[in-house]
Image (cartoon, rainbow, N blue to C red; front, side, top):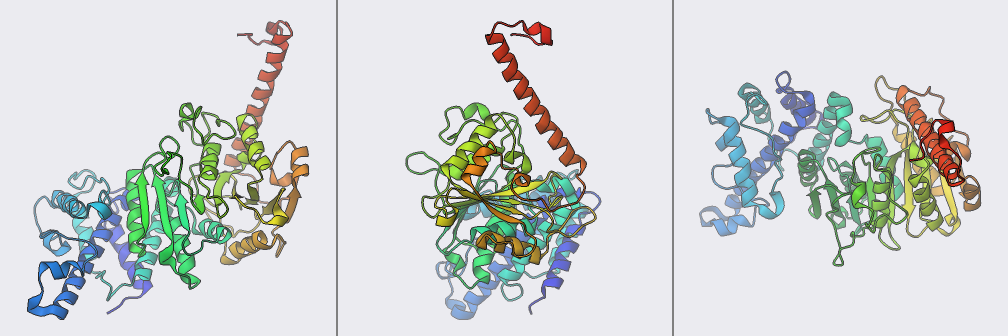
Length: 501
């Protein structure tokens, strides 16, 4: 008997709520997703076993049955075999996860993360029993829940966990409307390789597959790759892709800027057809010391206290020749900040790989209230856009929310259409700007220089502080250059209250 999406979502949220009280909502995902995944593979294994027995009856043996199973579950690791134990339940679950991972080393190694299941201060046994009781009300085999339904349920939990944990959610969840906008702009095709260097929970990779599936194209031919620095979040991404019935993927854990995990046979970063990401904004201590001789630093090493252009250069370096396109979410500061970032920005524009700058509405993200934009790069731009950059101001396309603003499906569609056509379909404010005009503006990409910015929402404190910090840094850089020239001319800097050291 199948269940509806509303029923599934309600039961999944009941399971999560079993942890409420003793477990911080920001940690719900650490425990709920591994249990959900285990329940799914266990119920599915039983379903597959029954199907094998129905076909072969008493002639069924281990060798024949193995062909029916996607994952191997050693004896004693089924949900029903473990969850009925009455002592040291958390420790038993941890051992079960280890056994399942060891039995499936190629596909499931490390997939359950590193939660301390036996630590009753982290997750009391009463909360764990409540979680089990809630999951016992759901059967998660193919006869009850399709992959589409299960994937949608997983995304429902991700969204709810993000709402519960607020700013802490930024590391693993990007608002779906932003993801759908980026995916709609980049337009994945069957056979493409898709890469997210800061993949979080895998939402952008899943959205690529979903778009192909919804448009009737062969999503199974898409190859998905991702890297994520946080172990728990990387595990969530892998479970997410499995539950969405995605076969050909590779999620690696690690620091993309310090140690990119995907390399070609020459040792250079591997190249992909589509590169998409929402990296952490303005990351400090990102590993600048290692980039002085890094081939990804094509136009220079970004500031040690701000890794925005490290991610951008990494992604552009990972773009396949001819077919390659890149879409990345960035804070507005990357459009106009000076110093090393200005030189990198100039290099990207002069190379003519920057195709579009899309201004987003304010206050969309969990992790920051800083105004954001999309940068779109292509290895081979359309003829009409060569030596030009398309500017789109989407800052007014939002629905005012209590804690966060939202974009409707229509808002997303309007901005995708504006990108595709280069026209202004409905108040999106679009302009194709020639290289010469950008050069005259000192390679400043601030959207307001080229088109009238539409949003009238008052600047919030976060935006004001960023603008102040950028202006202050510009003043410091300018003064440093002035003092350098004065010192070279033999002028005593103590007159200005400065040191010539």
